[in-house]
Image (cartoon, rainbow, N blue to C red; front, side, top):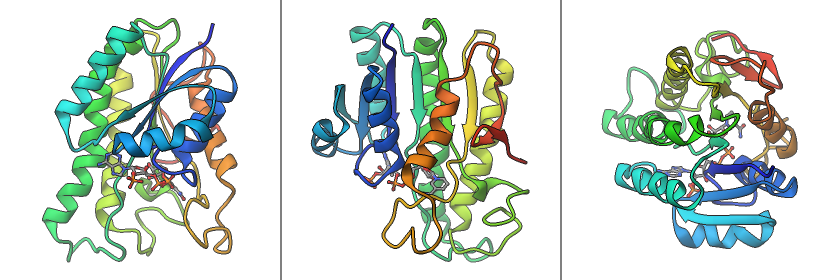
Length: 238
Ligand SMILES: NC(=O)c1ccc[n+]([C@@H]2O[C@H](COP(=O)([O-])OP(=O)(O)OC[C@H]3O[C@@H](n4cnc5c(N)ncnc54)[C@H](OP(=O)(O)O)[C@@H]3O)[C@@H](O)[C@H]2O)c1
């Protein structure tokens, strides 16, 4: 049976959301592709291919999250796969002691609370699917143990991004702990991936590899893990 999937942050062809959506569509799944504006999502339809439904979703707009869940409920009656891929970027070089907290609040609002709102809104639809899978796309930036980009390293990605991803990991663990249904809820890091200009030259890996890391959690068998944090199917330290 074709699955019904929803992927957020499918706003550009260079991104992980696009690659994940295209792979799901290639396999025959029906993919709802969400971008910040409807025009962005509609512009992706042809390139994603397959059976797609373009929708607008700005994660800072909670009513948009609820409206979208209502639409999926009405049109599909269930959701098999939710890929919470969208995230806000923090200002480059933002420090913990010197961050503009209004800016940091904006990053957290999208990356943590926007994703949290998606989990709340769509879990009822995932629960009625035969094998619901919820994937929160996280980052090693939110890990104590990631030696390249983690919380104990010096890098310029911005504190609010790292803190939001660490909190997203914690949220994932709490959600999975509570979930009494068969829905599997995991956080996944795609790894350092070339979704930005010059990425390959900096050593980032091809987008297809980062996307495969995410898809692994969407494709888990019924005896697969839940409540974990993974990259390439292997546990990452929190
Ligand atoms: N690339 C890496 O090395 C790497 C490493 C670890 C984790 N990740 C994670 O992987 C995911 C995808 O990142 P990416 O590298 O593919 O970058 P990306 O293309 O910039 O993806 C981020 C997406 O989130 C969307 N977004 C931002 N704010 C939003 C909002 N308020 N509402 C809805 N959508 C919003 C962006 O939309 P716009 O295009 O409109 O801005 C964009 O489509 C992110 O969660 C990121 O943290 C990436």
